[in-house]
Amino acid sequence: MTTLGAALAGAATPAVRAAETRTVLTVKTATVSVLGRTAEELEVVQPDGTAGIRATLGQTFRVRLVNAISSPTLVHWHGLTSPTHQDGVPILSQPALRPGHSYDYEFPLTQSGTYWMHSHQGLQEQRLLSAPLILADPADAGLDEQEIVVELGDFSFRSPKEIYAALRAPKPMSAPASGPDVNDVDYDAYIANRRSIDDLPVFRVDRRARVRLRIINSAASTNFTLDLGALTGTLFAVDGRPIAPLAGQRFPIAIAQRCDIRIETPGPGAYPVFAVREADRLRAGVVLASRGAAIPAYPAVGTFAAPVNDLVLESQLRASRPLSVKPADRTLGIDLTGDMSRYAWTIDNVAWTDALARSGRAPKLPVRYGERVEITMRNRTMMSHPMHLHGHSLQIVAINGRRFSGAMRDTVLVPPKHSVTFAFDADNPGWWFFHCHNLYHLAAGMATSVQYV
Image (cartoon, rainbow, N blue to C red):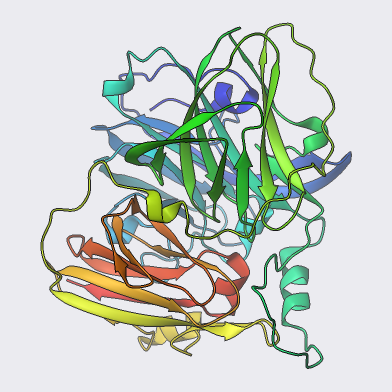
């Protein structure tokens, strides 16, 4: 394995080393500077300070996770099909790591693509406990392009507990919303590679550069639209999986999703790439700039107002390597339930709790090993929910009942009053978390599980 340090600092990613040594990742406190103020947050880094891991398809994932903070923690390898006991989810896959303890992970890497890692302990993800996890395809080694990794986030100077308490506080009765509810939390800043737009990352590129952007939405509670500005890009992978290429200048990216986009700069200059908050003009960003080009100041509020994230693009995506064609052995339906006024978020009106999970009474969807399973998610609420099933590759096969052979994903956005159906093969036995990836919806109980042997 090698690192992402240069890419996150604003340069090209270094070449992959052939040796497969064990990578040590330490969860620790870190000082970040946002809008000219400092705050103590969390990070997961290698001994040299590098955030994230870069490995290669066909290697073995060999990682030692060390807890150097004063509270329990655990890291999930989002999108990887690891063995269930190495998935990094407290209770379901393994106990949380106590302070000063470590755990060794080791499993084969069977897929390439853009993935990420994040805490699944409490609300630590809001404290920036996440990092890129890039799995390179050896077939891409000869491509003439510069790779740039961008990790998006949302940042508040308030503690996550304070944010959650405010969301859960009793509210006066109000008329039902006539349109979708968006943006549970008003953040102090939106960030890219842990930096706000007043100090946005600058990536130096050639005068006429071919660039592969690997963009990760690691925000706790914010959907974005990617705005390439003057550039036109080609979207060619989502959630690490290849799709039939689609050209455009703006692409939606929901919480926990990823987009791989190829672009070419037309000549020398500075080219900003923004992530604009859903239904707003607030943004984070990075700049691709030729060497010597001046970097202008970019305001936090742009001229482009991002729309509410929908399924228009999703309905156009087609997997390059879809699931095999076969009928479903099992079809299941779940309702995404709850409401904003009570800030109660559930699945089939049941709230997941750690106490239920520890007692063995947590909800579990009936699945058997070897089955092709289809799950239809019906959103009964006025908020969108990015739903993530651990340990499996999913294919979207229907939107609002309309069948099609859609993208392979691991995180599926379900907008208000819509339904989305995905298929997967039950080929990775274990107990797997299935939950909304809006951190505060999950904290309120929007989760269930899949278990089979």
